[in-house]
Amino acid sequence: MYILQPNLKVCWAKSEGELIISGTKGYIYVPAPWWKTDYFEIRFENPVNNKRYFYQLDGEGIRYEILSFVKSIETLVNNSYIDDEVSKAMVQTIADFYNSNDVITI
Image: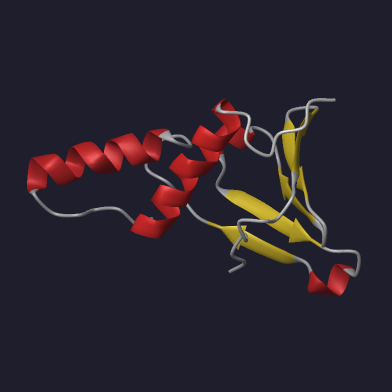
């Protein structure tokens, strides 16, 4: 799995319903509907290096986090398949976007 570094610069784009996240070494392609993702690809200039990832979430996108949180409270067991550090990074990324940290508007 690829870990995004804090100084990695990416561009988010939506086109024809799919999501493309462009980076300095390649891009992530998420087919439509990207908000209900169960599959995505990490694509590089050399197609031999491309990777495909498949997973099934209970719920849709970020709703998985809420569903997992509610189940954890009800059962007093951590049901999350998402690592705590990944969850924290997601929240920080959203906060950075809303606060316009490292955001360039074109």
